[in-house]
Image (tube, rainbow, N blue to C red; front, side, top):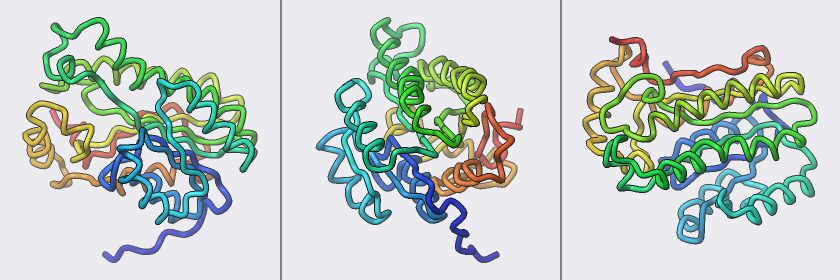
Length: 260
């Protein structure tokens, strides 16, 4: 089977993609897919340290808007959305690919997770999706699609996923409730659940290489997914072809989640 060039079915669409850290990021796969099917991009980066990795990618994708965004800094949130409103006046797609927990709390097991660490993980990894969705919704004047990234460990216990399991469970529930609240505005919301991917965020998990190997062995398709598998799925969901789908948690994992 040959890889066909995607059709530009999102020409004119405006997409905000948060969470790109480097060329291995899930968010980068989403941004690339949107770009390939014709969307214009607004890309954010966390800080000056990250900028050097993200800026060349944004340039390759002809990103119209490239700005810093630390969701803990309201001034940066304001600046991003002010710029989108001034330059575009609208938004069609939003990707939230942000997750973080203090290393000690992430690797120490849920029982030993501190209250502060749990709160920080919840704020960055879950509540930031709600906050940013609140800002996106008024710009989605003709409807739109929002995506956030979750993982199988939200639904089943995955050893060493620890505090991120409950956090991602809350994120999935938030996506469903946002889908309900934003449905009348024709805004669709999905939680995307890729299989294990070798990303910078995942590298903080204990024994992550073992998780990768086990996923490849258990997958009915017999192989791991990559960031473009995730990106192309999100691109499809952002098109009119998926206009009656909302509130889903979609697994892109080669079928791992169906296995006992």
